[in-house]
Image (tube, rainbow over all chains, first blue to last red):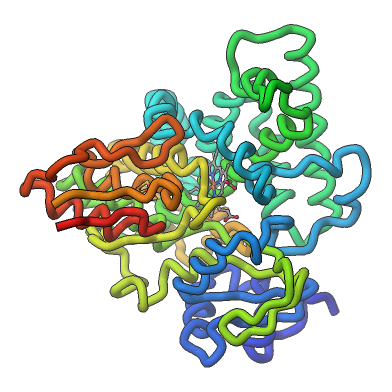
Length: 402
Length: 64
Ligand code: HEM
Ligand code: SF4
């Protein structure tokens, strides 16, 4: 039997984040662990990992980057063959970098993602949301996940990178291969190779025919201490833009659509109080935080009574932290005007999401545009909604009628 | 009331700017920039308290 087929005996010593019930609805599982005697659970599955579920523990681990390193950040061991071959040195900086390199890996891309810099993408994002809605608005039914949410971030990122929108289907497939089907090692490796090979082509074409000003060109021309950045860095950042910027954001948009379809009172509240949008977006990100990352323990350490060994994997369950009642009142409830919301959907500490301002913009514009054009809608059959989970949680099929 | 920002702890969540845009903005890398370095007008006190209580890095201190 493979790890995914064995039934779970005790959730605090044998959790399985890829079990169907965990994928579809992880929150009751997190609660069970968080309120047990072992709020940091452990499993032997998938070569072993720890799962902290309390807000304070998750944040403390995220802050301690010297003990909890980002050598690997996927919730599974690396795909077979990942550390060999010509692309072994291509990571996903800055997410896979540790200090001291992490500092410049992150610093170089931050200006592109500052709020004032991402604002230029708002009109384009609105146009693309409207174009997607035009496709199905007359039909009275749509898949809010695969006809709408799924297409938004991939198109925004393509535009940002300066690559043709015709790559959408390939990008989507590669990103899913890298993040969603991660128990399939072969597919992961193939997706990774496809991404790197595609961007090698883009870099070569720019080297032969320089372009005016797109993100890849800017990256290629960046210098650190008087030297052009290495090609592995350029390829790594392109890889990161796909894997960090697409699946994550579309999952968040999808979960919010699923929520709105079931909550006419929240649609009404936002219609009547549009000034609530900024806090509403943060609250939805708190409740439906899509991303779980991992850390690798650097040296043996006892953390909150848990004997962690060098090389152990720790899962950073930001979605679990965001529903800890020690930190948030009525954590499972969506309160669009919540006043105290130190949520960590985007992580915490030095690796905190660099793309958060872009993600927020996409989420807000996607929801606003839909609610303006389709103010009333509902799920066709709640039980037919399907979910992705593990590393990134969000709906993959979500039929609605209007 | 005055605000103090610990820039080394700030990692650019921008929750402060969402809560109190009159007092917190963004610098060129998206970290917080304090827009009112002197006394904060009373009308903004509630918003500033919200900014403080929404910062995930606890990088904001209020001095009263
Ligand atoms: C709702 C959507 C998103 C969520 C929930 C999200 C979540 C996260 C989280 C939790 C981390 C922390 C990783 C860690 O601690 O190891 C992270 C890092 C990162 N994200 Fe996002 N992300 C989103 C969208 C985006 C977008 C749109 C981009 C850019 C196009 C992006 C770029 C990055 C980068 C560059 C990092 C690495 C920062 C570093 O290591 O210094 N993310 N994201
Ligand atoms: S909320 Fe805190 S960490 Fe985020 S930008 Fe403001 S001060 Fe910095």
